[in-house]
Length: 187
Image (cartoon, rainbow, N blue to C red; front, side, top):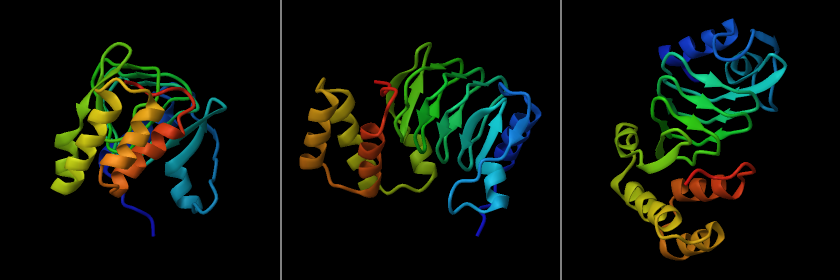
């Protein structure tokens, strides 16, 4: 079953196809295994021979500069005049503030902003609007503090999160994202 796309997502996809976001129109369609042809046209395309992957429901503003080979996961909000470097991944439910320059991966569930974006906490408003439970928010908050605020190395922080924080699916998603980063994590 194909998910229904929001109007903001359709506008973003149309802008990408028209070449307004860093390309000159799709040259070919990349279909991932298990993705129907109809769904694939909204999830992946090649822009200027550069692979660009989009997920669902991404509200976007005018003036983004999105490079190639990036992954934007589900329910990400990207503010106006944001520049995203090539090979960057942006995790589920992240919020990127306007006029930000994103040069490293943005973990899921966080707010990032600034020239050379830095993390500014959890995206509490966005998570509440999407119906996350208080238990999940509490677990994410504990994990965020351990990983990004105590000053541990990422490996030490991940081990501590596994030992001290309730392993709800969202915390596991955060850990998975960090462990799979190739470009480095914004901190």
